[in-house]
Length: 438
Image (cartoon, rainbow, N blue to C red; front, top):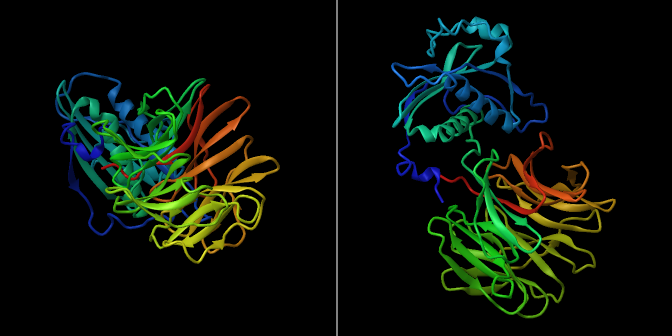
């Protein structure tokens, strides 16, 4: 699997052009605030730099591509270019070449300008984000790569914009793994945050489920029936090499990894009812964490790895519980609703998302790790299942079933800006968000 970590292999590298020191990295906006309002941003058509191959669509293509990416975040209101006042023929891409009054007049708070140079072998892009009110540069970058890298470069600068304005990079360098189920088989796929570059990972012609990214993004753990039993496998996404990790009789399901990639929580029914174990991946040694005769499944570590959330029916109906990392001090977390499953611990450490039954349908909820009243995140029709957090804790991905169709959907953690990521006649299930793939 090609990733941005291997930019050299893609002949793409980034050069820091310049930045205004105190401004870069400063948190301008609190996008997690309930009072947050989308930022008005203008994105000018890019300008050709020096001699380029004549391609008249490129100035607009670059601007449109960046506009689409920023709109996906839910943080920006991109101003229609028909409102622009600045003369593109006279304007440059520097502070000195920009009439900031023309941009503030149309309500822009931020402005992106770019210049490009491209021939058949090389693409050079200079991109700059300006604070319109102050008339100053926020961040500028120069990228050099191949012409085919242009979408990647635009996504990378979208990440830089988010980093400059919020203090934390965006998630355009992440992917979502999910299960796509046809009439006779279910296979694993991955897709970019923006819905591009759909890739099929498994070709087993069998039931495959529960993908779990390793913390370095290099591997996927999952369960497959390809050899008849629901066994846990581990696939290296670069080489495609697959190893069978666990093959006990009965159920074998992966949970969450440790931060160092050494351990993997698993659910096994090797001793009767499904129970939770912590497995050292290298030597496959197991530490049993739950010993009740009830069903205990879906383990997920807290970000500090001191606690584990899981699902148990020990009190009758499936509910979410928390225990410490060694299996002790178990406490029930969810007190409302008669069916709550699929916990997902926010990377920010304070919230746990889960699916809960409401009037016969499943919706996504979030609850504080200490308990209390849950907050419903999704409300639309259909069953909303299997939530997974983005690595910055600002989005949730989940599956939706209803009316004979299914899709993978993304929503801001506050419950706004839901959008389909992948949908079709085949069932789309069990999404799981990758770490940043650098």
